[in-house]
Structure formats: structure tokens, C-alpha cells
Amino acid sequence: MKNKRELSTMTEDYLRAIYSVEEWDDEGVGVTDLANIMGVVPSTASENVRKLRDAGLIDHEPYGKVRLTDDGRREAVHMVRRHRILETFLQKFLGFSWDEVHQEAEELEHAVSDRFIDKVDEALGYPVLDPHGDPIPSKDGTIAPSSKMTVLSAELDTELDVLRIRDGEPEILRYFESRGLMPGKKIRVLSRGSATGLITLLIDGERVDLPESLGKTIRVHPVSG
Image (cartoon, rainbow, N blue to C red):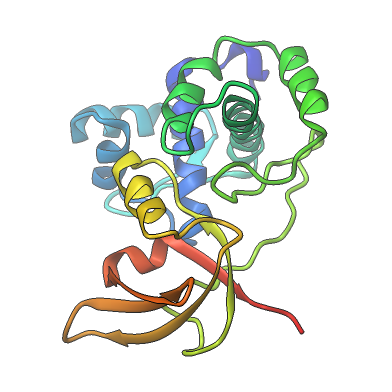
């Protein structure tokens, strides 16, 4: 397997993108969806997927989903750690908002050394979560387990802690923030209605309606005690 320092920027970007999808969807990601995530045409994504498969970093059968191999996941976790530490640094030290840090971290993650990342991690006090509530892998690649419950599957009218908000789309993050919906917030799911296409949440004593399609991007856990 190639050393991380020999991987191309394209390879690192694809591996981290596939990992991020697998965090939220255990079934992997289709090539067309991956092309949309990467901002390329499907033929380009298909060619890059072929290269990653030939390198032993992903599994992919024709018309099937793209999944990371063990080697691919190891490399992806390395990039995820860099990305999330940089996101946290940008917010806490430089004052970037949570909807800005993703893009900025994408630019920086390829340019800085592992030693720089380790020093930033130390300066931050070894955080375990990034600004979106995503777990930050440790230096040895260990990742703390996290709830996979979303507001789509949570029990109604139960107090919930908001753990994670899926990042990557700044306008959605700004929308959530305008509704007071961020990691650390306590909420209740009052109703879910397929007919209306809306989820009604109770946030800070106010009823807030969200499109049901956004429910899968909000991970929660029942408040203990």
C-alpha cells in the first residue's frame, strides 16, 4: 500500500468523501452521487473510481455502490482527522463560522504536515468533536462510537440531545443555525408526517417545522437521566 504522503490530492479527496458518506449511510455511495459530491461529471468519477479500485483502496462492482477497503478506510481516517482538526482550529482560533470551516479546511488539509496537525491538536486540547459534532479520530485512528439515531427514527416527544449535524452544505447549516438547531441543543420531535413532508421539532420552547428530507442529517440521542 502507498504511504499517505504519496497519495494524490484527488485520491485523498475521494477517500474522505466516500468515508463521510459511509458514516451516514452504511450502504456506500453510487458513482453518480459521488460525482455530484466531487463536482465532476460521472465519467470523470467513474475513471477515478477505477483508479482507486485498482490501487486496492475501494471495492466497486459495475452498477454497484462504492465502498472503502480496509486500506482505503485507514487512509480516509487519516484525512478525516486532518480535516476535522483544521475545522476546529478555524472556528476556535480564527473565528470562522461553522458554515465556513468545511471549505477552508478542504483547502488546507493537503498543504500542512502531519507534525503541524499534531501541534494544532495539542494547542486545541485534543478535541474529540469538530464544530458539527463529528468525532475526530485520534492519532492512532481510533474513533469514538457515536449514536446513529436521527430525528427520523427518534421516539416522539422525548427529550433529545443534538449530537451531530451533517456538514458540507453551508446554506443548510445557516438554515439550521437560524432555527437554533446546533450540536449541544436539546430538542423534542413532536410529529413526523409523510403527507406534509415536514418534521415538527420543539426547540427552546418553540415549534419549528423542517423538511423531512433534512431529518437524516441530524443525529440525536435521548437525554440520559
